Amino acid sequence: MVSPEKIAAKEKFLLFLEGKNLRITSQRQAIIDTVFTTEEHFTAEQLLEWSRQKDQSVSRATVYRTLPLLTESGLVREMDFGKDYKFYDPNYAEHPNHSHIVCQDCEKIVEFESDKIVKLEDEISAKLGFSVKSQRLQITGTCDKLKKAGTCQNKCS
Amino acid sequence: MVSPEKIAAKEKFLLFLEGKNLRITSQRQAIIDTVFTTEEHFTAEQLLEWSRQKDQSVSRATVYRTLPLLTESGLVREMDFGKDYKFYDPNYAEHPNHSHIVCQDCEKIVEFESDKIVKLEDEISAKLGFSVKSQRLQITGTCDKLKKAGTCQNKCS
DNA sequence: GTGGGTGCAAAGTGTTTGCAAGTGT
DNA sequence: ACACTTGCAAACACTTTGCACCCAC
Image (cartoon, rainbow over the protein chains, first blue to last red):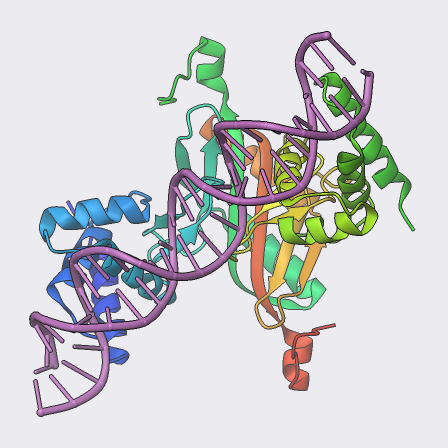
């Protein structure tokens, strides 16, 4: 099931491409369909694999050439969780200010939004003479409940 | 001028090495002296260059082999500002919860601390079932004052 | 038809590692 | 002495790019 917001985001991206006079090829179509159908964070390699399930002809090069367009459009955000490869988060169109909690035991990632934090960020930035354009907040933690239960072996939930 | 806190941090790191039965070689000495003498964020390459000014024999490999020790000790933090290379922040020993504002016009980076934000992070994390171990908050913005003045050409301040 | 797009494979780039020699403790 | 360290250069892993062909508009 794809949320209406995702569909809208996809629409926005198509307009973004149009605005730059870029074409909707079948390969891009497959990549775009993939991106705006998932809620999960993904890597370039995963995107390649998923896209290929829709269109066998998608190449790694095209994926890597499309990712900058996606981030440039503001609909997808590049994330670094300290791994070798980057992750991409397709949920920024709907929740531009969301943050992440990463469990250091199981690597599960939870998203959350906090208006209070956003407000504080604005205040502090203003005081320092800046206008906030975007924010990235990443909390690393351990999940207490399962920790107490004695297990949190890579499933945490 | 090196702050007393930096000197203490260096001392802590030497103890950290000792605790792991690792040796204080002249190369490590040069690297450590460099790290705990600056307040600036640096890259692996910069650290190599600076360290070589103290000891010509420091090699790139040793720098790359020492960086994980520094981050593991908790006294230096690896940062990703979206560039190809990573930055390292030596100010975490003194200010474990500080955050960064990055000016998107001039790339200047300002550090700040906010107890209020830290508190909110704790609250939210607890509500979601996590205990905060560390946090990274990075705000991207533009500096208004100079923007109004019409110039912010890579100096911002 | 034309300018952008594609796959492939080669090239890049920052980082890691095997190895033989060196060195702190 | 022994185990940890080092420099060098080769190896890596992810990403980018040159090129000749292809295709959306």
